[in-house]
Amino acid sequence: MRQLVESTWISLNKAGEELCGDSVIIHATPDSFVAVLSDGLGSGVKASILSSLTAEIAARMFEADGTVEDVMQTLIETLPECSVRKLAYATFAVLIVYGGRDAHLVLFDSPPLILIRQNAIVTLPLEERKVKDRIVREAHFALEENDYMVLISDGYTHAGLGGIYRMGWGWKNVATAVQRFVQTGVDTVKLTEALSKTCMKLYNDEPGDDATVICMKVRPAVSVCLLTGPPANKEMDEFAVKRLMAAEGDKIICGGSTAQMTARVLGEKLEVEWIPPWKRSGKEPKKKGSPPTATIKGIDLVTEGILTIGQALEIIREAKTIHDLPRDNDAATRLAHYLLAADDIHLIVGTAINPNQVADLIRGEPMRMLYIRELVTALKARNKIVKVERV
Image (cartoon, rainbow, N blue to C red):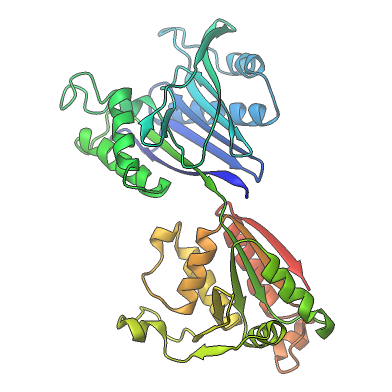
């Protein structure tokens, strides 16, 4: 099973500033993960521009297998040091993870990465060296499942300065806070929110500096396979169902005809749940008209087709993460939850034309394809890896 790095980040602007002087770039593919955090000198527009340039250069060059020397040389030539304060115009921290396991960390004037493994703070093997007259710290290390990693800008280490913490929150105290939060089993969304709220509280709701946190967790990828619509050729029915059953992860069917086909091929009983889940739970959903679900042995969710997919699409568009989903238990919300919780999504789409559907006849392709295309766009915008297979 593929292992990946889940990530979430939040930036707090310095009080009175419309733009944040910190910049974050995160790129993820099935094989690699890159996170860059850059802190521009000062605050406001100038700091934002400088950190954006630094983050973009660092991300692009490291992704292209550029060396630390090459990156530093480019940054020095592009962003010379401040002639007055003799400081770099922007700092950066870059974390590159290959295959969810092999990590490479590069730090230039940035707080170290916080790594929590089995509820303990891990000391990273950082090596310090001079590159183009700049001090760079670097580490190569292996990651394990359920490792948590946190990158922070110095706005976090300075939080509470002169108040609760005379010298500021400090890296060790931030690391201890991360350690305590992860013991509750939080995901990266909740961890990021908890750290951000604590930081804001230490600043008395008026940050004295831009403050950014990137929270990451190493975990197995979550897979979902969804079959919707019968194949154009009835002889392909068995093939489509076998593709669904052989897929990794949760299995979903959307469509009445598709459900009947699957039950027939599997030799299982199709039972429609005419009483909506919300009636059984006693909690009425905010939206009305969600079609009933059904059950087939071996399938995790069976719903109606186009209407349910369309409703799920609208729910997904309004939610950034699964934490933003309504607490309803209707078909569309359940479908949206499966899709937002997944990392790898395999859509098997039947191309049979419905002779009773005027739109199908006019378009020359199933109406469901319109919804599938929009669904794919919405899911990819949330960094999901989506594969569409037509049958």
